[in-house]
Every structure is written in structure tokens, then in C-alpha cells.
Image 1 (cartoon, rainbow, N blue to C red):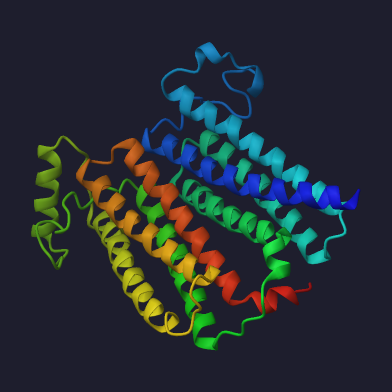
Image 2 (cartoon, helix red, strand yellow):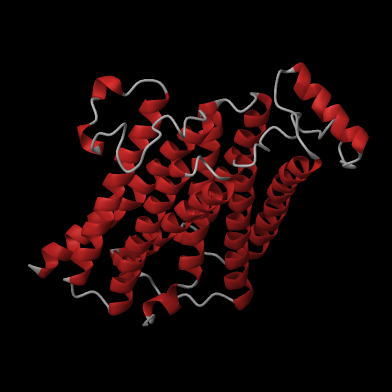
Length: 328
């Protein structure tokens, strides 16, 4: 009986990870299409209970917003079932606590989602809502790995402290970059610098009044909203973050590549991170050049989440000895 519970938990934890990643994509579509208020009430949808809302009326922006609510509820339910099964399993106490922590995060996330609607999409709440989604995603990965057979069968590899710290620093930088991305999306700064790879026609921006005027003239010609120096600064910091992460990853590969074993999980994850980062930079450029085409911008968001997830796995792999002994 216990083995059945454990195998069910392993499958469920992987399903929660995949479902959460898809939910981030669906949420990004809501923002990219600017349809967050297509369903103006919460927790009901036009006065109807969520699951009784007619499919025939899910058209236009309602399709994205109500669909997001439905799928978010499913992810919340899966997380609840996962925490209950963990509570009745023979897993270590710290894994059970992680399960309930994830449940707490998804409940808060749901409440924040409701607040964004009830308070007409306030930027601070929307930003926290977006970042908490990434945090919840990381927690689901941690739980899935903790329950996996990979964790119990991994060989003890004691990496140098510099490698362990490097993995943590890289992951922290990606997380900060996602915060900047959320700040950019929810302050209408996504096209504050409408050209690429130059910035306001410059390779090194000056943030002078002339530069801001040139940017706003280009935005006016494209029939887009004009921006402030603050919005331009946010956008620039996001681009700068991408450059810094690329440099840090390159240095990390140089240092780590000397000691990592061929065909190891660490090497495969490092290659995966490099590929995803390359795709992320391309998507970022195309997002600007396409003037924030909804599906391109949404893939940019979910690809960023995937990058954070892979970096999290790299941290887990390099800290695997500590995770085996973890207890709290």
C-alpha cells in the first residue's frame, strides 16, 4: 500500500510541475492580450460559479481570463491532493513541510489573482502575483526531485564550494531577471525601448531628454503609448540583466566544464540552460521587434520560467549531498 502511495506521489509531483509551467504560460497570455478584466468579478464569473460558466460564452478575452481561472483551480486542487498524500506517506517530515508550503503558496497566489481583478489590475499586486508564480514553480520542482528515485540513487559528488556558490548565484540572477521582467510587463515598459539591438538608436544609452524624445517620437509614429525615463530605465535594466547572466553562465561553464563528468546530469542540465538562455534572448528580441506579439511575449515568459527551473535543478544537483541529509 505504501509503495502505491509513493509511486502515485512521484507521478503527481511531476504532473504538478508540468501543469504549473503551463499555467504560467496561460497567465502570460492573459497579460499579453491585456484581458485581465474580461471577467470583472471574482470568485464568480459574471455571477456564475466558475465551473458552471457556459463554454459557448468563453469568447474573446473571456476565453483567456476564464480559462486561466479554470486551470489555476485545477493546479490548486492537484497541489492540495499532493499535500494530503504527503501527509499520509512515510516521507521525511521536511518533504511533508515542503508540500504544505507549496499549498500555502498556491492559496496565496489564488487570492492575489482575485485581488488583481477586484482592484482593477494594480501594478504592485500584479508584479507580486507574477513573481510568486515563479516561486511556486521552483517549490514544485524541489518536491518532485525530493520524491524521485534519482535523488536516492545519485552518487555522492562533492563539488568545490566555488561551483556550488556559482550555481546559486546564477539561479539568483535568473530569479532577479524574472522580477525585472514582471516589473517591465506590469508597468507598460515592454516597448519603452522599441528598437533592438540598439536602444533609442544608441548602443550605449545616455537616458538624456534627447534620447527619451527620440524614443517617444518612434513610439508615436508606431501609434504606441509614449513612455517616461523611468520606464526606459526598467527596460534597459532587463536587457542589461540578460547580458550579465550570459557572461556569468559562460564563466560558469568554463569553470564547471573542467571537472564535470561526461554524460552526467549536471553537464546535461548545463547544456539545457545554455540552449534555453539562447532561445530566451531570441524571444526577447522578437518580442520587441514584433511590438509585443501576444504569443511571442507569452513564450518569452514561460521560457524564462523554464530557465529558472533548470537553474534550480543545477543547484540541486551540485548540492545533492546536502539534500540527502536534509532535515528540518
